[in-house]
Length: 102
Image (cartoon, rainbow, N blue to C red; front, side, top):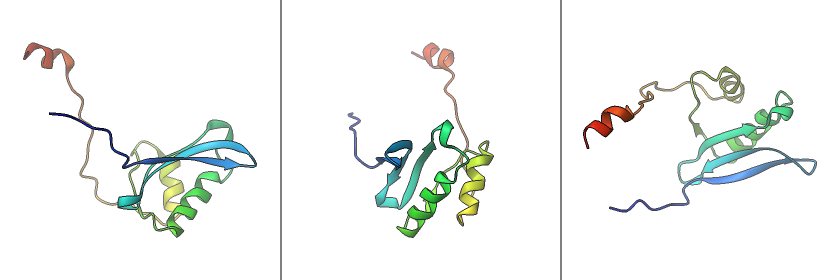
């Protein structure tokens, strides 16, 4: 078996007045915002909202957000997103247990 790198997600810099204020990772095939990061010094200035609104205008209509990130949830809801299904959950490998099986 091989696991090969794909170019499914494309990362873009968010630039304001020649300054990089964050990054956004997109999946054009699924019209999905995969990750949005606004760097700490630039948070609460509306940049995240502006980026999301621009991407929605370009057809990006899907994203995933951590349930323990109320700040991000607020931005996405402000931009018209609503919570969908909550059928996913985190699973963590028990390293000691998996090593015992070898």
